[in-house]
Length: 354
Image 1 (cartoon, rainbow, N blue to C red):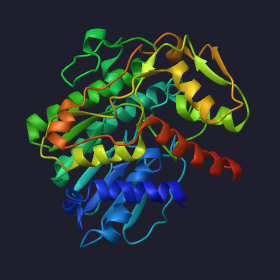
Image 2 (image 1 turned 120 degrees about the vertical axis):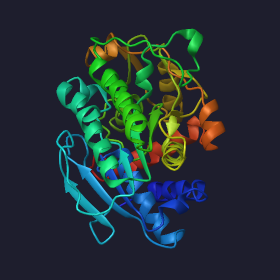
Image 3 (image 1 turned 120 degrees about the horizontal axis):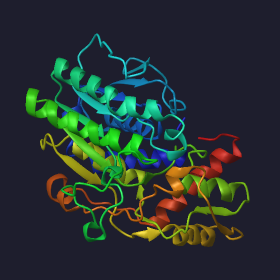
Image 4 (image 1 turned 180 degrees about the vertical axis):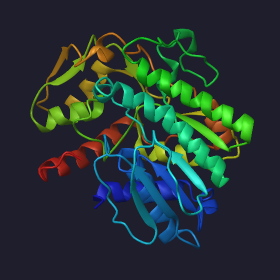
């Protein structure tokens, strides 16, 4: 069941994509990782669009193996089918599929350092299997979730970072199983586009956050939220000087859907916000200011992906997404943080983690 905050988010996203979403009327969308944070938003938005804006509902097939996905907010029915499956193995779908969103992945360093092989499998073999399915079904569009981590620790001369930057990535470092498998996933997408004409696009999200994230995710915003709710210090990993930009979920899903529904095939798009680029100590200070009584500490991260492999800067150049997708982030950081914390307080009071 979606909370009030999530219901408001869903309506906002639907309004922001209404002019491009008409292509989805009466179509079937297959999504991998549907039980996760992003997947649940996609599923909710598709249901809302079908009920409020489109001539016909959207049928959704969700595939998840529940390694990090938690649960669905929507019950199965005529327009929502659930398949429990590990997509490192090929999958047979006995009906038409018009769109594929490959959102499955293990994105938190907390999890991908302990699930090293699984992280590689979903981004490589899983991607190849989805591309094969897209080719077989002759889909109208496929969206692959890459990552801003493909840029590694960018040269300061390439911050904000455009899609043309090749990256500064270690192939054996503590983040390599995530970073390099996402890079290979993009290579596979381009190969299938150039060889078979599969209409695939790649998104590189920049720190998208919002309601529905696991509070034990160990990424920075849910980590700070859990500390505030449990009246513990906000723990900043390392020096706290590393910078990020943070994109609220309504802006993120709007950008992802605009990418899915563009005709710019075989291309990668940065999706996120380009302001403010903020360091982690400053982010902790804002959250402590919003929720008085919180204190801030600097500590070593829970594993080497935080202490040794953490990129120093991360900020997108959105010129391409603005030009080709008419994408523009709208939610400022403080508003997004307050919305996230309102949701987090509600689920925490109910004794849940997500």
